[in-house]
Length: 406
Ligand SMILES: *Cc1c(COP(=O)(O)O)cnc(C)c1O
Image (cartoon, rainbow, N blue to C red; front, side, top):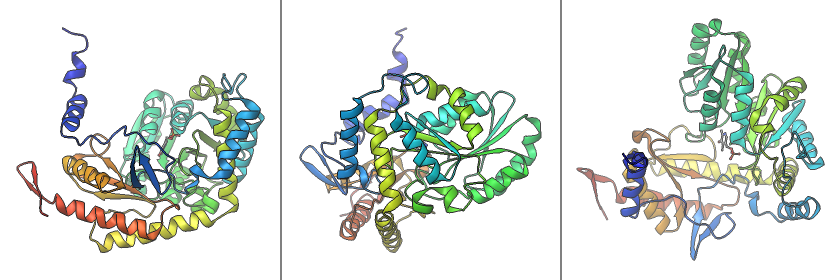
């Protein structure tokens, strides 16, 4: 037995080889420019509807300057964990401004948003505890739960009634209960019913945590996320998020009351045993946060674009589910067709992300179309028209192969 047989036998690799040989493989394409409303892949220019750059800040001159200045002052790395030599005054400054922004007593900054969930969830729940999670929560929440050894109970997507039922059924059997949800769901684009989730948590004395990765910059006061959107920042126990989307950088954070954050800063292994966020990333997150808090024009433009796109897509008869945010799933409902549509769109100058199994069920395969404030209506119209044409082009399926209709 060859010890590497498992690779050639893996479905993942077989699918990858199939997609590459059919010239449909869409991943790891090399970007050669900043990504704003447009991006370059070598000489090919496309409209970029596949980034999480909601406020379009990732090429903002003030933010780039802040990153450059931080490198000049602090160098390129802290070469150590926050716990030891890796805390700069700049980290503290960012944490201080974030806690005011999020209306919480304290914040700590992690190297990534993924690590927030990997570190925080196991610090809060262990083998005698139970974690209640939305069935569509982000992979980092699922992995954080697995690292915790706690019992996991999934409730139906964005369904507080089902959560209540499950709390009633299971919460008595455990010493602690924790509820974790995305603030805006990264595939379906719907907003978590956080007011009702927090109410359910209060009723059963469970700790509540929201991951606002996609919600920061998008909803809430000055973009403060889902808790702020519902006016319940004081009532939720923990607000997590990332700098890698609206905040034009990389890194993550968790906010809560002072004792809780003091505890997490000594109990989160992904915080303590990983190098701290580098100076340029801290400075750019801080500069982006300041712009976001003081200039609402980016958020306004984002929502103008979002409302426009949702309205036009519905008018075109595209299947876009229940989205109510800049994340628009365009359901194709077959993975091969999804890859074919995405490829044709790219060739025609529109970048969108195909999302297929195992990220979603095959019958839920979709194109994820994401708006930013950097787009204009003409670009959005062009893209939507191309999407509708591409879907129509591959609309007839015969025995697993597609017949062109135009
Ligand atoms: C994107 C995302 C993350 C990961 O954040 P990174 O900072 O990019 O690691 C975590 N949670 C959710 C809900 C996300 O959407």
